[in-house]
Every structure is written in C-alpha cells, then in structure tokens.
Image (cartoon, rainbow, N blue to C red; front, side, top):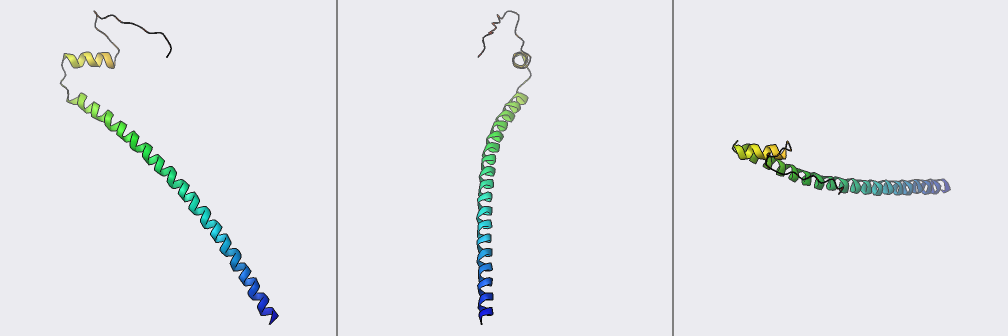
Length: 98
C-alpha cells in the first residue's frame, strides 16, 4: 500500500510542477506577444503617417504634371528646383546659422 501511495504522490508532484511550468511559459508567451503586438501597432501608425505624407507629395506632383507648360511654369521650376532668379531681382543671402 505504501508503494502505491508514494507513486501517486510522486506523480501528483510531477503533474503540479509541469502545470506550473506550462503556466509560466504561457504567461511569458502572452506577454511577449502583447509586446510584439504593441510594437507592430506603433509601426502601423508610423507607416500610415508616412503614407499620408507620400500621398500629399504624389498629389503635388500630379498637379505639376497637369499644369500647362507656360512661362509661369518654367519660372517656377527654375526658382524651386534650380535656384535661379530673374536678372532684375535682388538676391539677399543669409549667412546666419539657425
């Protein structure tokens, strides 16, 4: 009788230890998955903001493509992209550091 009781106690102890082990592993897994989920949600928000910024740039480029190529367009492109100015304009340089 004593042998059977000792075996049952040993088996019960092993089951309790395994249950605690799996509970700890489960809690750790849930916590790490929650952390990963939060990181991914932050990345999604950042990417959505980047996407909105890129859509605004695309819209501006589409407007440039749709604009007629006239003298105003040529002057605007020369100013914005090439840094040129008209001969009669006075250019001021600011050498102060912001």
